[in-house]
Image (cartoon, rainbow, N blue to C red; front, side):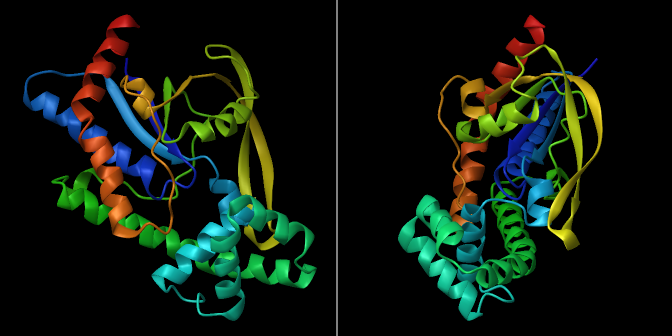
Length: 261
Protein backbone atom coordinates (compact mmCIF):
# COMPACT_ATOMS: atom_id res chain seq x y z
CA UNK A 1 0.00 0.00 0.00
CA UNK A 2 1.23 3.47 -0.88
CA UNK A 3 0.10 6.76 0.62
CA UNK A 4 -0.75 9.36 -2.01
CA UNK A 5 0.37 12.96 -1.43
CA UNK A 6 -0.66 15.60 -3.94
CA UNK A 7 0.82 19.08 -4.03
CA UNK A 8 -1.67 21.73 -5.12
CA UNK A 9 -1.55 25.34 -6.25
CA UNK A 10 -3.74 27.32 -8.61
CA UNK A 11 -2.20 26.48 -12.00
CA UNK A 12 0.45 23.79 -11.49
CA UNK A 13 2.94 26.00 -13.29
CA UNK A 14 5.22 26.96 -10.42
CA UNK A 15 4.76 26.01 -6.79
CA UNK A 16 3.06 22.61 -6.72
CA UNK A 17 5.16 21.05 -9.45
CA UNK A 18 8.34 22.35 -7.78
CA UNK A 19 7.12 20.70 -4.58
CA UNK A 20 6.55 17.44 -6.43
CA UNK A 21 10.06 17.46 -7.92
CA UNK A 22 11.83 18.22 -4.63
CA UNK A 23 9.78 15.72 -2.63
CA UNK A 24 10.41 12.88 -5.09
CA UNK A 25 14.10 13.74 -4.98
CA UNK A 26 14.02 13.71 -1.17
CA UNK A 27 12.35 10.29 -1.13
CA UNK A 28 15.10 8.92 -3.36
CA UNK A 29 17.73 10.46 -1.08
CA UNK A 30 16.22 8.35 1.70
CA UNK A 31 16.31 5.22 -0.46
CA UNK A 32 20.02 5.80 -1.01
CA UNK A 33 20.36 5.77 2.80
CA UNK A 34 18.52 2.44 2.94
CA UNK A 35 15.17 3.83 4.09
CA UNK A 36 12.02 3.38 2.00
CA UNK A 37 8.76 5.22 2.62
CA UNK A 38 5.63 3.90 0.85
CA UNK A 39 4.59 7.27 -0.51
CA UNK A 40 3.55 8.41 -3.98
CA UNK A 41 3.96 12.10 -4.84
CA UNK A 42 2.29 14.12 -7.56
CA UNK A 43 0.84 17.59 -8.13
CA UNK A 44 -2.01 19.43 -9.76
CA UNK A 45 -3.66 22.79 -10.31
CA UNK A 46 -6.95 23.68 -8.63
CA UNK A 47 -8.09 25.99 -11.42
CA UNK A 48 -6.94 24.10 -14.53
CA UNK A 49 -10.38 23.56 -16.14
CA UNK A 50 -11.20 27.22 -15.56
CA UNK A 51 -7.82 28.46 -16.78
CA UNK A 52 -8.02 26.40 -19.97
CA UNK A 53 -11.49 27.79 -20.69
CA UNK A 54 -10.88 31.38 -19.59
CA UNK A 55 -13.57 31.17 -16.90
CA UNK A 56 -11.39 32.37 -14.01
CA UNK A 57 -11.96 35.62 -12.12
CA UNK A 58 -10.79 38.97 -13.43
CA UNK A 59 -8.07 39.00 -10.76
CA UNK A 60 -6.41 36.12 -12.59
CA UNK A 61 -6.72 37.96 -15.89
CA UNK A 62 -4.87 40.90 -14.39
CA UNK A 63 -2.10 38.71 -12.99
CA UNK A 64 -1.62 37.00 -16.33
CA UNK A 65 -1.59 40.24 -18.31
CA UNK A 66 1.00 41.73 -15.96
CA UNK A 67 3.14 38.59 -16.23
CA UNK A 68 2.75 38.59 -20.01
CA UNK A 69 3.93 42.19 -20.27
CA UNK A 70 6.92 41.55 -18.00
CA UNK A 71 7.91 38.43 -19.93
CA UNK A 72 7.18 40.09 -23.29
CA UNK A 73 5.19 37.16 -24.60
CA UNK A 74 3.41 37.28 -27.93
CA UNK A 75 0.37 39.55 -27.74
CA UNK A 76 1.56 41.45 -24.68
CA UNK A 77 2.39 44.49 -26.79
CA UNK A 78 -1.28 45.10 -27.56
CA UNK A 79 -2.64 48.34 -26.13
CA UNK A 80 -5.43 46.52 -24.34
CA UNK A 81 -3.11 44.12 -22.54
CA UNK A 82 -0.66 46.87 -21.56
CA UNK A 83 -3.52 49.06 -20.32
CA UNK A 84 -5.08 46.30 -18.25
CA UNK A 85 -1.73 45.17 -16.85
CA UNK A 86 -0.99 48.74 -15.77
CA UNK A 87 -4.45 49.12 -14.24
CA UNK A 88 -4.08 45.83 -12.37
CA UNK A 89 -0.74 46.95 -10.95
CA UNK A 90 -2.14 50.30 -9.84
CA UNK A 91 -5.51 49.12 -8.50
CA UNK A 92 -4.65 45.76 -7.00
CA UNK A 93 -6.49 42.50 -7.64
CA UNK A 94 -9.88 43.19 -6.06
CA UNK A 95 -10.30 46.74 -7.36
CA UNK A 96 -9.19 45.61 -10.81
CA UNK A 97 -11.87 42.91 -10.77
CA UNK A 98 -14.47 45.51 -9.74
CA UNK A 99 -13.35 47.76 -12.58
CA UNK A 100 -13.66 44.95 -15.14
CA UNK A 101 -17.08 43.98 -13.85
CA UNK A 102 -18.60 47.43 -13.42
CA UNK A 103 -16.75 49.90 -15.64
CA UNK A 104 -15.25 48.02 -18.58
CA UNK A 105 -17.39 47.74 -21.68
CA UNK A 106 -18.65 44.37 -22.87
CA UNK A 107 -16.44 44.78 -25.92
CA UNK A 108 -13.39 45.29 -23.72
CA UNK A 109 -14.26 42.21 -21.66
CA UNK A 110 -14.66 40.11 -24.81
CA UNK A 111 -11.30 41.33 -26.13
CA UNK A 112 -9.70 40.63 -22.75
CA UNK A 113 -10.99 37.05 -22.85
CA UNK A 114 -9.52 36.53 -26.31
CA UNK A 115 -6.14 37.94 -25.24
CA UNK A 116 -6.15 35.84 -22.06
CA UNK A 117 -6.44 32.69 -24.16
CA UNK A 118 -3.37 33.80 -26.12
CA UNK A 119 -1.23 35.04 -23.26
CA UNK A 120 -1.98 32.60 -20.42
CA UNK A 121 -0.38 29.50 -22.04
CA UNK A 122 2.78 31.49 -22.77
CA UNK A 123 3.14 32.93 -19.27
CA UNK A 124 2.64 29.51 -17.71
CA UNK A 125 5.26 28.04 -20.03
CA UNK A 126 7.62 30.82 -18.97
CA UNK A 127 6.90 30.21 -15.28
CA UNK A 128 7.42 26.47 -15.75
CA UNK A 129 10.72 27.05 -17.55
CA UNK A 130 11.91 29.33 -14.76
CA UNK A 131 10.96 26.69 -12.21
CA UNK A 132 12.82 24.04 -14.18
CA UNK A 133 15.95 26.18 -14.27
CA UNK A 134 15.74 26.94 -10.57
CA UNK A 135 15.36 23.22 -9.78
CA UNK A 136 18.33 22.29 -11.95
CA UNK A 137 20.41 25.06 -10.35
CA UNK A 138 19.52 23.58 -6.95
CA UNK A 139 20.81 20.17 -8.00
CA UNK A 140 17.54 18.44 -8.92
CA UNK A 141 18.09 16.18 -11.97
CA UNK A 142 15.77 16.76 -14.93
CA UNK A 143 14.12 13.34 -14.60
CA UNK A 144 12.43 14.54 -11.39
CA UNK A 145 10.85 17.56 -13.06
CA UNK A 146 7.19 17.01 -14.04
CA UNK A 147 5.07 18.65 -16.70
CA UNK A 148 2.89 21.63 -15.96
CA UNK A 149 -0.77 22.68 -16.03
CA UNK A 150 -1.84 19.24 -14.81
CA UNK A 151 -5.23 19.32 -13.07
CA UNK A 152 -5.81 18.37 -9.46
CA UNK A 153 -7.30 14.89 -9.89
CA UNK A 154 -9.81 14.95 -7.07
CA UNK A 155 -11.65 12.01 -8.65
CA UNK A 156 -8.63 9.82 -7.78
CA UNK A 157 -7.78 8.51 -4.33
CA UNK A 158 -5.62 10.97 -2.37
CA UNK A 159 -4.49 10.71 1.26
CA UNK A 160 -3.15 14.24 1.73
CA UNK A 161 -3.36 17.42 -0.35
CA UNK A 162 -0.47 19.75 0.38
CA UNK A 163 -1.53 23.28 -0.49
CA UNK A 164 1.09 25.86 -1.34
CA UNK A 165 -1.06 28.66 0.09
CA UNK A 166 -3.69 28.27 2.80
CA UNK A 167 -5.84 30.94 1.18
CA UNK A 168 -6.62 28.44 -1.58
CA UNK A 169 -7.85 25.80 0.86
CA UNK A 170 -11.43 27.07 0.59
CA UNK A 171 -11.32 26.38 -3.15
CA UNK A 172 -10.24 22.79 -2.56
CA UNK A 173 -12.79 22.32 0.22
CA UNK A 174 -15.46 23.52 -2.19
CA UNK A 175 -14.38 20.89 -4.74
CA UNK A 176 -15.12 18.32 -2.03
CA UNK A 177 -18.46 20.01 -1.22
CA UNK A 178 -17.07 21.29 2.11
CA UNK A 179 -17.34 17.77 3.55
CA UNK A 180 -15.07 16.86 6.46
CA UNK A 181 -11.87 14.85 6.04
CA UNK A 182 -12.42 11.10 5.92
CA UNK A 183 -16.06 11.35 4.82
CA UNK A 184 -17.55 10.14 1.56
CA UNK A 185 -18.66 12.69 -1.03
CA UNK A 186 -19.31 12.96 -4.75
CA UNK A 187 -17.00 15.16 -6.84
CA UNK A 188 -17.46 16.50 -10.35
CA UNK A 189 -15.26 15.53 -13.27
CA UNK A 190 -14.84 18.67 -15.35
CA UNK A 191 -13.93 19.30 -18.97
CA UNK A 192 -12.95 22.77 -20.26
CA UNK A 193 -14.72 23.90 -23.44
CA UNK A 194 -12.26 26.61 -24.48
CA UNK A 195 -13.99 27.64 -27.68
CA UNK A 196 -17.17 28.42 -25.72
CA UNK A 197 -15.51 29.86 -22.58
CA UNK A 198 -17.16 27.35 -20.29
CA UNK A 199 -16.52 24.26 -18.18
CA UNK A 200 -18.71 21.19 -18.57
CA UNK A 201 -19.40 18.52 -15.95
CA UNK A 202 -18.91 15.19 -17.70
CA UNK A 203 -19.43 12.92 -14.72
CA UNK A 204 -19.21 12.43 -10.97
CA UNK A 205 -17.36 10.01 -8.73
CA UNK A 206 -17.57 9.08 -5.07
CA UNK A 207 -14.37 9.70 -3.11
CA UNK A 208 -13.13 9.90 0.45
CA UNK A 209 -12.20 13.47 1.37
CA UNK A 210 -8.43 13.64 1.98
CA UNK A 211 -6.56 15.59 4.62
CA UNK A 212 -6.12 19.13 3.25
CA UNK A 213 -3.29 21.18 4.71
CA UNK A 214 -0.44 23.39 3.59
CA UNK A 215 3.02 22.03 2.94
CA UNK A 216 4.51 24.28 5.62
CA UNK A 217 1.82 23.34 8.16
CA UNK A 218 2.37 19.65 7.41
CA UNK A 219 6.05 19.91 8.29
CA UNK A 220 5.23 21.86 11.45
CA UNK A 221 6.52 25.37 10.77
CA UNK A 222 3.45 27.04 9.31
CA UNK A 223 3.08 29.67 6.64
CA UNK A 224 2.33 29.93 2.95
CA UNK A 225 4.19 29.86 -0.36
CA UNK A 226 2.56 32.74 -2.18
CA UNK A 227 1.66 33.05 -5.82
CA UNK A 228 3.45 35.64 -7.98
CA UNK A 229 3.20 34.84 -11.71
CA UNK A 230 5.24 37.92 -12.63
CA UNK A 231 7.98 37.20 -10.06
CA UNK A 232 10.46 35.81 -12.57
CA UNK A 233 13.42 33.55 -11.90
CA UNK A 234 13.95 35.05 -8.45
CA UNK A 235 10.49 33.93 -7.34
CA UNK A 236 11.18 30.48 -8.80
CA UNK A 237 14.41 30.24 -6.78
CA UNK A 238 12.61 31.32 -3.61
CA UNK A 239 10.00 28.63 -4.17
CA UNK A 240 12.62 25.95 -4.78
CA UNK A 241 14.41 27.03 -1.59
CA UNK A 242 11.18 26.78 0.42
CA UNK A 243 10.91 23.11 -0.55
CA UNK A 244 14.61 22.20 -0.66
CA UNK A 245 15.50 23.77 2.68
CA UNK A 246 12.66 21.90 4.35
CA UNK A 247 12.88 18.55 2.60
CA UNK A 248 14.32 16.76 5.65
CA UNK A 249 11.48 18.11 7.79
CA UNK A 250 9.12 16.83 5.10
CA UNK A 251 10.63 13.34 5.28
CA UNK A 252 10.30 13.35 9.09
CA UNK A 253 6.66 14.45 8.82
CA UNK A 254 6.02 11.76 6.18
CA UNK A 255 7.50 9.12 8.43
CA UNK A 256 5.27 10.24 11.32
CA UNK A 257 2.22 10.14 9.05
CA UNK A 258 2.99 6.68 7.65
CA UNK A 259 3.71 5.25 11.12
CA UNK A 260 0.45 6.66 12.51
CA UNK A 261 -1.70 5.30 9.69
